[in-house]
Every structure is written in C-alpha cells, then in structure tokens.
Length: 136
Image (cartoon, rainbow, N blue to C red; front, side, top):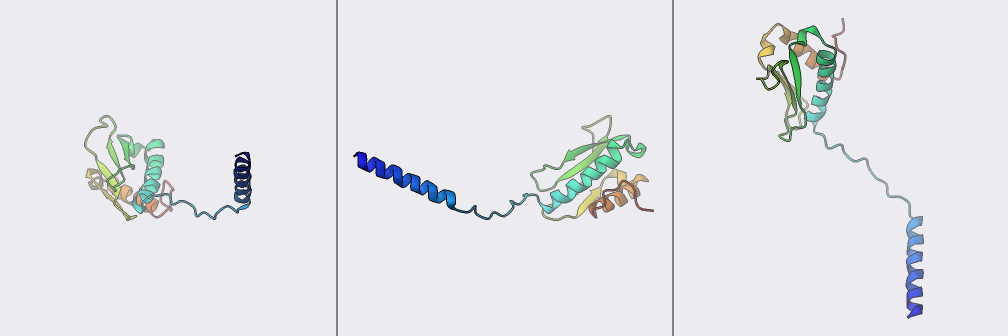
C-alpha cells in the first residue's frame, strides 16, 4: 500500500513538472462586446456632455442630460430634458440602433434655432472629432 501511495505522489509530481514546462497558450484579446451603436453613442455622449453641459454653455443652460447608454433594447441614447424637470418630456433624443454606427437626432429642439448647431456638433462628434467648436 505504501508503495502505491509513493508511486501516485511521484506520478502527480511528474505531471505538475511537465505542466509547468508548457508554454502559455496564445490568447486573442477578448472583444469588448460593445455594438457599433454603443461605441458611436459613447463617443457622441462624452463630447455632448463635455461641450454642452460640463462647460456650462449658455445655449444649453436650460437643459440637462439624461444618459441611457446602457439600454438593453439595443438603442443606446441620451436625452436633453428641462433642467428643472428631469422627468419631463425629452426635448432632444440622440440615439443609435442595433449594430449601426449611424446616430439619429430628433425632438423639438431640432426645430429651434439651436437645432442647426446641435446637428453640426453631433455630425462632427460622430465623425471622430471631439472638439467643442467647428473648425473655422
């Protein structure tokens, strides 16, 4: 019986020694799991918050941002709502859907004078330029 336990211990030690000599398997980087729509919306939302809200831009003083990027519906988005009524009706919706990187913008603010600026800002940010102002 002692001889069998000794053989098993020796066999286990040999197996561990062989395993430690093995090279690490090559691994590929794990995909982020983010859809094209989420990647596009993250880029746009970060710039919108930085340029419109955090900078205290007077044109956007009456609004606050409601971030809904972690949507399980496949439609990441953010909303601009009245600053004094967070639960109020959205005045601007910026969203992307599914596996598309196309960003859609709609809502009552797009019919206001501010709509042209919103459209150009969103287009610039979606194209990868995170600046707060259009190039002169």
